[in-house]
Length: 495
Image (cartoon, rainbow, N blue to C red; front, side):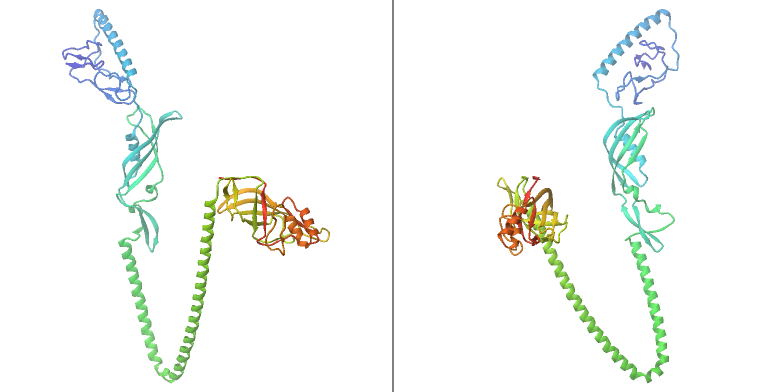
């Protein structure tokens, strides 16, 4: 029995034509395998569709022309062939509908082949993981774009140039032989008629890009930094330097000895003079040593004081940082409503005859800001203020004024924008009674500087909207530590 090269039907070996399709048989030759049109896979047997991608099968042509049968035989066999072909097409269509199509695109092996080709001889691909594979089409070229991660092994140690020492170039090992290297990148594979997927690979930067084997440093004397070879060369250079130094010292000693022998006669006459000079030099040396000891002791004391001061500053900074952290821990979440008032303490003094518009200053809250029985802002928070308007007392205008506004609330290292102003109503300023006084309102307090009920009334009438005012030629004088209230003109959200 033999097999038809066209339809794959079994035919007796003594037949010259296929009894199913009428194709001439190649006597004594084995049937050639068929090839898939899409993936190029060789498919033997009578299968009409590829088992890999589902594509139609290209049947090889026969070299023996079909013998022309008689009209009657041609009609009979033609009818049989048409019927069988129709049945085959129906069965093939049914199987194509029932069998899910498989992908004819590239796989991990195709990408690994391209990556292995991309690597140089200093590394060998070990494994590859295909992370994504997407079809793409650009400028009439169809293919796939793949992203991957891979692992390779360095086949020879890699080095970077670390410097130059004498005539040697020092190398630093970047990757030892046999060490793994993680790779990542993307590949572009083109669809083609040939078997396999040609394409290009782009790798992310790695040690393989920056380092190279020792043999690559051609035309240069190289040493690996810290190696036995490097240490031996250094030791040899040190020994040569020591020998040269000892030789120079011996020569100098010999020259000095000869000079002393020649001058021995003359030096005997001046022995006493030299002895006196030696004693004077010794006394000077002792005095210099004592002075050096005193200087060193003074420097030691200064150093100890500086170290103590540095420790004090570090401790102060640590305590301030802990205080800020503790304050931030107490910071609640919520909203400080518009119109809320809080008592603050001034940290630096302000005077109407010394301040200027846009001068900055800081005040500290002396009480918690509580909303709905919850502490939103703990005491000790700071408000950043600025002088919005200032007027000193003069001959033409006897009223002094300070307008104080606030734009930033800070709790520890966190800050929140706000709008506020010094509130003229409430308990007023507190602190230095000689300068600021204590009264029912800021205007009344500053007016109280005049020393009478009339002055206090005038000050209270002049104050308002964040402005402190006094009359009768007195300046607005707020000492450090003075307390007053700040009113929020905008709500502040605390996350």
